[in-house]
Image 1 (cartoon, chains in turn green, brown):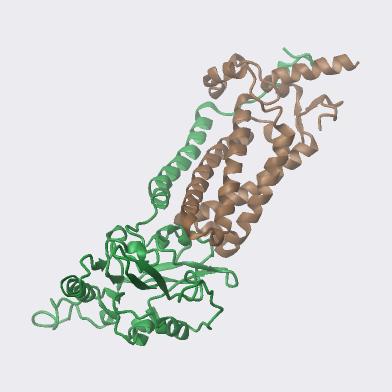
Image 2 (image 1 turned 90 degrees about the vertical axis):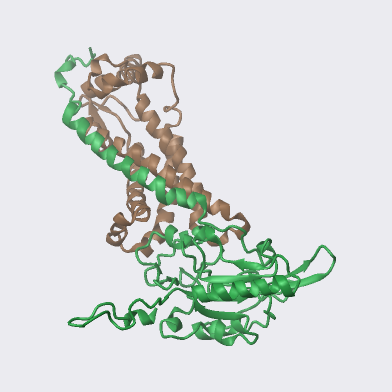
Length: 297
Length: 219
């Protein structure tokens, strides 16, 4: 993203092409979460709080290692734990770092009515601009991942920024910085996709995870956070990762056909009564239609 | 409400009592605020309406409260007019000659009671949509309390709220046009309460005849 400001496209009075032209530079960023090497240490959770200036709040104990049931307005990064019993009776402790997925087609942004409250940067980051947020919560209805959370104190909605403030300065997100196992990676979308596919192939051929794969759901146009899963056929095992997320159909219906139909209808209605007035005019009561005794016709 | 004298000594007819006018305008004023802020949330082209009305945040905060006020006014209205708005057998004939009504050929219209079938449609339309808007609006007011496994409820609420909003806009356009520009005298009746005898006789013939019969019986 930041490189875009310094990449030269045209040069005045210059013989030949600008230096570097035609190089395939990619600005699309991506976070890769390899759930197979996550140890659930929650360093990413702490790093997220520290960088974004939130204090560690009360946790919810629910007979698991999980800090709280779901992400909160001031807790954007949560490892979801699931003790999964496989068909052969063995156990797997599945751990997935949950945060905003930074969809290519963001349901939150589509649903939002406030001018400038949600923006999508050219590098793929979907960011909330709280100054413009009106706190209506429509983003919460548009998101297929249960990410935007309403703050009762600020009366606005908050979520993971993919550390846009760091990324725009050429740094990696705070969670990536803190990860001790290297299960978190950050780079361009194509690099991360390659790395993820390589890792998934390795899991399939060498580790016996025959269903290992990459989670980059096409229903939302792909995401800028992708996962390597041991069992890509059952993403819901990983703390309820939706199998085929997409912008909710009713939200899509509301923002596209219904809105156009409605706008057309409203304009037609106003135009219609105006034309009626021009053609037929008002209903005027002639006072002499009535006899003086008021008995009527 | 109905205890006030309807045939006024000055030769005019009381169309709407003070009580009726008050409740009408409770609903009317609150609906206009809901409409303007609702239009702001409906399309980015009209978001400036929220800005003019004090900003998007206050529009979002006030819209639900005004909505509750509107719902209350609708309840009072149902209590006040529900009985008079019931469909009667003669309504079919009125609808059958709606073309005459549209072309202002009122002499060819079957006589209407206190409320003509079009007014009844407006009343029930606003009542039904008002209830649906209230129910879906409660979900939209507090989306954070709808648990994630019920998030379909949020999406249904968003959609229902938009559809019912559009129905009320259609009714509102017709109501405002007919109440001001088209039916001369109607706007005055909901402000000052009274209409001329000729007006009552022309637009609500059955009602007017009944008033005359009642007053004759009293004397």
